[in-house]
Structures are given as C-alpha cells and as structure tokens.
Length: 144
Image (cartoon, rainbow, N blue to C red):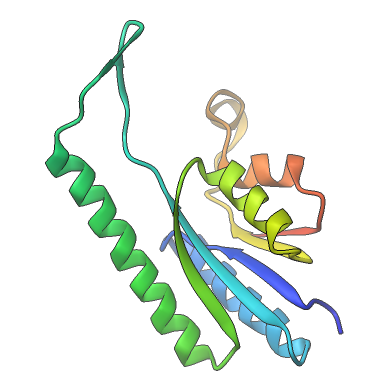
C-alpha cells in the first residue's frame, strides 16, 4: 500500500481542486486508503497600532458562510470520487492546523495546492504550502 491516510488541504481554489484530483488518484492506488479533506478558515483581524479593532459580526458570519460552502463543495467532490474519506471544517491558522491535523491523524502524506506566489511576495508574506513543506514530517505533494 502506497499511503493509508492521505490529508488534502482544500480551500476551493483552482489549485486545491487540482490537488483534490491528485489526492483521489493517490487514494485509488492504495486500496483501503482514507482521504482526509480539511478546509481551514480564520476570522479576519484588524490591528490599529498595537490594538485589535473589533470586526463586525456580519463580516465574521460571511467568512463562516463561505467556509461552510467550501466544505459542502468538498463533500460533494469526495462523494463523486467514490473514495473513502471525511471532510472537516476547522478554524485556525492554515499551515499550523494542517500540520497538527496530519500529526494527530497519523497521515502518511499531505496534498496541497500552490498559489504560485513567487520571489519577494513569498519571502515577505509566506504561503501556506511553503510553510507546510518546510515544517511537515511526512511527504508533501504540492500541486500547481
């Protein structure tokens, strides 16, 4: 068996949809493999100087509603794939949450889409896929 527990980080983007297809293909190569699909979201924060400014509840509700829609889309894709798996919606920092989930659920591989940030932007902002690759203790497949 190639992999028994495959973790897919899914955010609904074009790159994560391609990553979804690759994760399904990996799962189909390993009979009995389980696909863990995780969508991580975070409520926005606004800092003014050193103070944290309040965000209107309507904004947080909109963020949560989009996260639920993304999770429902992932559930539909998983069902259509015919692969055994679960879909989870988790609040937190994306890279840290993905890494924690992989460790907690004994995942063999992490599949993640790449936003394609380059050069200075990646250096300044960092990217979820870059952080996951740098800190994961299991193989990471970054799909472009």
